[in-house]
Structure formats: structure tokens, C-alpha cells
Amino acid sequence: MLLNLKKMNTKPTLEKISPNFGSSILVKKHTEFLKEIKAFWHFHPEIELVYVNKGKGKTHIGNHLSYFNNSQLLLIGANLPHNGFTDRLTTNGSETLVQFKPEFLGDTFFEIPEMKPIHILFEKAKKGIIFGVKTKQKLGAKIEKLTEKKGFKQVLILLEILHTLSKSEDYTLLNADGFAFEAQPQNNNKIDEIFKYINENFNQHISLDEIAGLVSMTVPAFCRFFKKSTGKTFTKLVNEYRVVHATKLLSESQSSITDICFECGFNNFSHFNKLFKEFTGKSASKYRNEMMNLIQ
Image: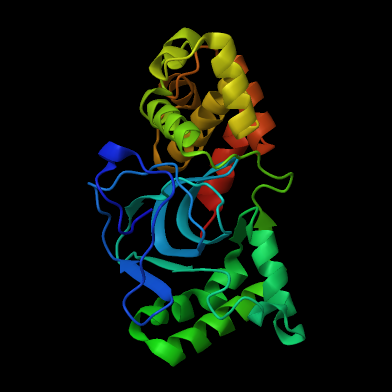
């Protein structure tokens, strides 16, 4: 996440977010990628709205992994764990981040009849929501304007944005089947360390002995812990990382699909094809052709 992250040596999992004095909303806008800020696995009680108007990166929210190329509009619910998003911003690109607590207007404000659609939106956001092109086009400029407003006007614009999002049918729930997550700091330090290691080494073979040793666990204990924490086996998650990286390379590079397969850490082309189709619903060649024709 491109925001006020501290150096990553302490590996925090519960992130403390502090709006400016006299404000209950934190709004940040970045026009260049801050390379020294690394993605990390974290959560916070604030709801998070992220709008990238031009950029590229990987999305990891709960159990959801994907790659985006150009723009993205996300709503992440309170305490839903996620990693950083933008790998880089493209020309004239920016990322706007809005964070606020669900009860920032009072414990019962969103329970009144007029606010019910937004209350339902907040419930959906607990699974993570990604909005489509129409909603991005409709709200992008308004979200960016939040950085120029203060106080009452900022709250009003945010409510208008949330109201529009609550009425949108142009969205996808990222963790439709729910997400297995236990907010225990010592466990999340381990998960953070594991995800960082996968992110840096997924293009190589990672044995269970190696990854279990990293967090000082036996292989059986590690497998139970990882499945309970993420809802997936370690092998499945590593393969998903590899496929997501393949979608990035298929979109951005001219390398052959075979070369991409091996560059992503697969050692068998037919296995790569099988997993790619399972994960994306289409073959790698069809995915590349669609991405070449896609302009958003």
C-alpha cells in the first residue's frame, strides 16, 4: 500500500492509521511510486478505498490474487488482510487512498433507512470489492478531488462516492466464499514472513522443508497452520502467485508463452497450461490475445 508505512523491520500486522488533526478521514494521493515502501500483509479497522487511475500491479486481498494493468478501484472492508498493490504508476498516473472507520459518523449513522445501501456496501466490503470500468469512469475524478477538500465538504463528497458505489451493479466480490483469517499478531508475523518469501522466490522451487524452517515449524505443523490461516495449501498459493505473475508477463512482455512458463517457476509446460486455465478460466494464449485488445 502506498501510504504512511514505517520501515518493515518490525513486521507490523495491525496497522495504526492516523488522520490529520481534526479529521476522521485519511486521504493520500501519490503521483510516483515510492520504491522504498514494500508491500506487506496487514489489516486495520478502517475501511479502505483505493483508486489507481494509471498503473500496474498485483492485487492480494484475503484469498484473492490477480494482476491489473492500467486502472483499479477497490473497496476493502475493516480488518480484511491485504498486501500492497501498485508495482508502478505509468505516465500521468496516480493512486488515491481513502481510509475511514465504519463508525466515523457515529455508531448508528449508517443504520438509518437512508443509509442502508451504504451499510450493505460496508458488509460486502468485508470480502473485498473490485469495481468495473463504468464505475471507475463515473467516480475516479471525484475520488481524486477528495484530496482538495477538507472538513464538512470532504465528508459530503465521500458520502456521495459511497452512495454511488452502493448503487453500482458493476462490481465483483473478491472473496465471495469468505476468508479464513485469525487476527493473532504472532501468527500474522509468520504469515507476513511467508508471503514475503514467496513473493521473492516463487520463480524457484520452494520446498516445504525450506518454508517450514523459515518460520521454525515442522512440515506437518506448518501445513496445518498455513491452511488454517489462508484457506489454501502452500503449493496452491505458490502456484497462484506464479500464474498471477504469468498474467503480468503475458500483458507486458513479448516473451513466448513457453519462456514465461519457466520464468514464473513452472518446470512443466502442460502443468502450467492446466493451472493457468483453472485459475483464469482461459488458456494463456487466449488471455494474451484478450489483453492485447483490451484498453481501459
